[in-house]
Amino acid sequence: MTPQNLANGIVRAVLILAGIVLFFWFLYAIRSVIAYLTIAAVIALLGKPIVRLLQRIRIPNTLAVLVAMSLLFGLFAGILALFIPVVNEQSKNLSLLDIDALKNNINLLYLQIVEYFDANLPLFESILENSNIEKSVIEGLDLRFIPNFLNSFINALSSFSVGLFSVLFISFFFLKDSNLLQNGILTFVPDKKEGNMVESIRKINSLLSRYFGGILLQLFILFVIYTGALLIVGVENALVIAFLCSLFNIIPYVGPLIGGTIMITLTMTSFLGADFSTVILPKATYVLIGLMVGQLVDNFFSQPFIFSNSVKSHPLEIFLVIIIAGLLFGVIGMIVAVPGYTAIKVILKEFLAENEVVKKFTKNV
Image (cartoon, rainbow, N blue to C red; front, side):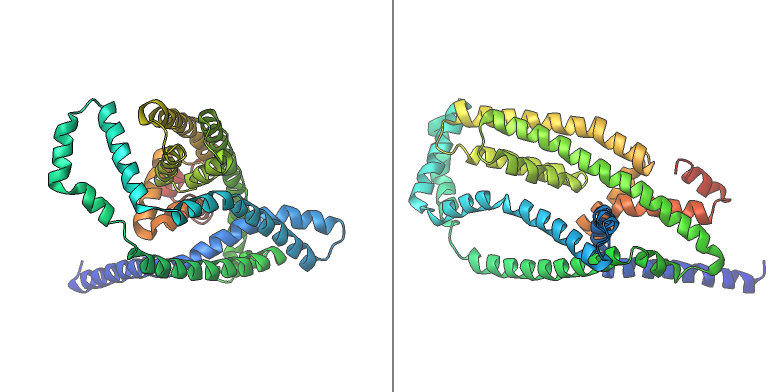
């Protein structure tokens, strides 16, 4: 190998590496757009059966799309409406917040916890008095955080509004022209490879339809288990809380922890004022057992079923993909990791079917 060839090889490798880095940087920069497209594609996938049904009874395509989107939007609004009682109840609690009463409740809860664990009460009281922990806690409950909270809330609401409009706009055209996304992709594909890409899109659509169907089944199973656990202990708004906590399961690995924390917290706050050892702790324990049962069923039944029968991937493979996507793109990356990874595998199999590495990598697809 001549020095010239070596230099050319190094330059080519550097350019390829730079291209890969720029590509991932570009994906990171447009991660919000990718999220909008993904959500819109899912909505289009859910709305297609409705549009086809309406078209069979000779309803014009545009009107059928508007009806389908109205139904889906109404369903979404109905789900949000379920949370109004919970939000209203918490708002009342905040509006009636009394610092003196809160101080007494904290002291009462402290005494109950210490008594339950049979701790040395005088010693703990001395420690609290000397360290001013109680004073610090109560003084920390000022209202200076409210302006920052309101600013954050307004920014989040603005971002949500932009995202909602973008998703609805994109979804409308995805539903109106079912081949819009496919034609857009084929624009960047050479003519001789269009057949491979069309077949890839067909397979991706089939696999992801089964995947999202499996996700709905997974969430329904968790919802039933969580609802049963909350109803047994007598938590108010059990259906709403169970629905919310099961939805968090969409976020892999992190979501169940968030949902479980919310469920335990709302269970304990539902019985404030009751005895800690005989009421609050046992009820929280029963709910925790329900959470554990739900996660055991999810991890040993639901997820293996979904991953093996829909996306045709090993659980360890999925785990690594989700972790990498989470590190690169955050929560959004974790949510879209499995569908995106499935699409990549299908495309690789169609375009590089003769490559030995690709053959082994995509043998189950």
